[in-house]
Length: 196
Image (cartoon, rainbow, N blue to C red):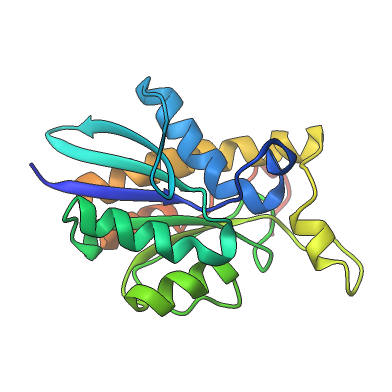
């Protein structure tokens, strides 16, 4: 059975729940909820296991804190002998508007500490899905922004993106990274009456 590792980046602990920096956690939580599988507290992370059309999926929320995410990723890739091409990392991104999804087959960490540490340990050749969290903060307030919690209006804008992200994970597992990028990097257009 082919194995896949789906990683949602974030920080453990109630104080970080539903913060912008934990958007990766929120996506894999939504996936696990839909699949009806619970997370267990395992080495380096919370892990849930499920299957999708004959493929085995490991859902991982690292508990190493964001800056050491690579420790959890490397451990679970090795423990389950999962090919790196079968891993997708879900992460927050301040460079994208809230509710935007960008999927890439590989690349740099782009200044994100979680991606940066994963790259240090296993290199840049892994798929990642960036979830836009916006950047509506004053200069010098980036840390407060990413560690701040979503308000209700933001959650309502984020939820459709989380739903799309869950579908994108299924596509990644079943159809591969290229088809998934082609389909899900096209953002759904809001209804408009006037011509752009």
